[in-house]
Length: 328
Image 1 (tube, rainbow, N blue to C red):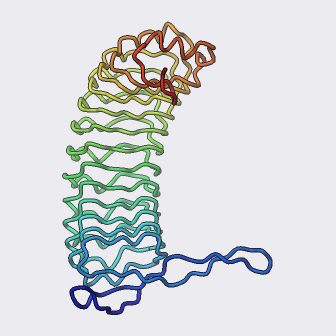
Image 2: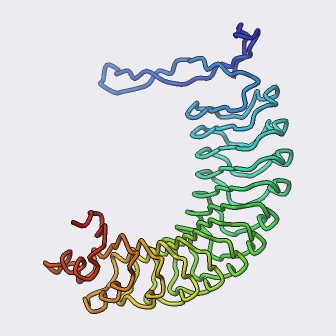
Image 3: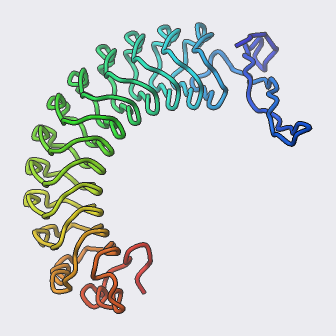
């Protein structure tokens, strides 16, 4: 990034030139191409927030004098390495979503960091977070992580996003008792386990894994949203202690009976589409869930019934939404 000085309202303000938009052209063969032109982005070195999305940056540099920076967003660039930001000790948020980073490093001085987003990179190992004890939100989705490591010391963590990786086992998070949101969707997890200490958890997502059984959730009494779609679950069970559930997503499994949910009197959203339910008598138990507002039952055998919607409304006259359509 080139730098030059211009006169601002309060004197000299440092600015940096960053390439941005391009102009689309067509050559003599009709092939489209883009000519990129330099576009000035003026940056106040005393700024507390800086957004450099889509700037085609391949390196982090020239932030030495931006010591007041609290939020730095470098999304959608070509950055390969975390570097040259050790002086930004006031930083609260660092966003490096969708770059080409392979290693978590050079963050030890950023002790005030609360939000770190490294999603959509090429990271294989969770590391380099030893000093970030004030982290509250950590995003690591869509990387190449195979094992959960080096996060158990992040005692202030409230949200952990590890979706779309290659994780097989839920482990090494038992000390994260402040977690309220935990996302493991699109991994290779085959068992729900090691969550007993996470008693403050309100949202748990295990969509698109290799689960065959609902289990080991009895200590999660504050759980409000549970997402278990796209697994191999055959029976609704072991939710006896999760009486605060408001959303239950069991879509795209192998369930043939609706059962063991009458006690979920706070349930407002129930998604059980794309299963194997074929008996209307089995659906009848939903008449006991008076707070239920939305039901997804489509793509079950019984959804082929010509009176499908009418029968649902007879069972639950108060229902507000059936599948993706408002009930009338």
